Image (cartoon, rainbow, N blue to C red; front, side, top):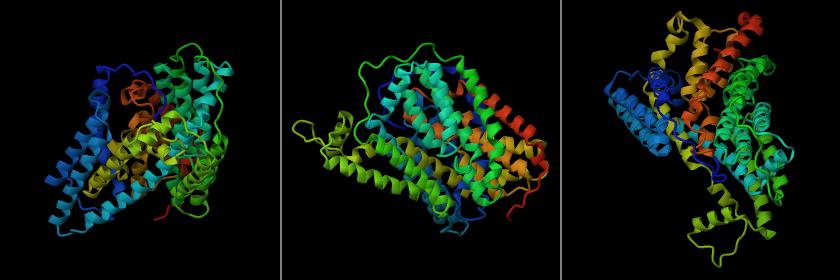
Length: 506
């Protein structure tokens, strides 16, 4: 998500994964729409237009666009471009569908709800990105890299340190912000070592998602369950051990593939620039505000993030007025925005230059996905498959446990937020243990694929060309072992909760 130092490109992974990709994609077509489309909001009970010409075309458009997203590293086509076009086409089809049945305003209401959801995500991510870019420009991550190297840590030790920190920090902060922070450190330490960077990024994504699964503040899905009143605050901590197992199993397996040796020594001492430590304090205070706004004031967390961004801008004004000169990369960004050249141009600190360095391709990708998913939801695809999950014998007769396991697999194909929203909307009659199970699977299931969680998608932008869909897919089998082990551990140590009744709001 950030533009860091130039890193070597990862050799393109060839077709040994093609068969796996095809099977994943077939599964996507059959099941993605089932659980993700409920992000649409709008009409409370969407009309069933899944069998109409408009509905079928909309599904095909989305499948085509997502195919191009998955093939980004081969096609060299930014992932935001196809989904932006697909979103527009799908909502044209939604509008035509509802006009045809005499409800011309229903589509407009639904799409406005989607845009509102995206606006909160956009502003939250933009604030987080700006802080991380600002900390990078102040040399905070370079200083941390220098500390790690000065301590004589090997690459394997750094692998475990970044993973452990991601697991421990994500329950307090959100897993996306945690992943961005730790990945920036791993990329700084492993500059030029693509094998290490890939493994470290995968480890961080898995650890951040696992750590966020046992805390109401660790992931948006846990916040949703907690806010709904289904699981109480202290009850989430029953998932600590299963979450730890979910991270440890693939981490131990991947650790054997970590290249030997220590990071290259730093020739010059790295010093945090003026204001760097104050920015760290501001960032921590911003995270605390985001949590407090939601927990105590019942306001969207994005308000806390944007307030913190305002504090960062005020501090940047202080740096500007005290005559601080930014680094060369930030100065060049500012001059490019102004359309000028560096000759004769006075350098001064400009926070908007840092903001401009956000990964806009990733932000636009989120827009396209949310709008595409919302459009499919408005066409009624959720209702078509929701009964197969929890009504009667469940999917393929596997019962509630099987359905909850499947929810986690689905969250690997799409973001877990709409998946969990779909489950909460269906409001199945489950025990406390089953609600904790679906909370766990929705939280950690997104680690199976790089596109399954916001942390994974963000790191694909941050380590562009190195941490990719196929690089993550290579280790999906190890992550799947951790996924299965965490479910088994939960069913074992929390067996008494599997029969504990819960007063579910109706």
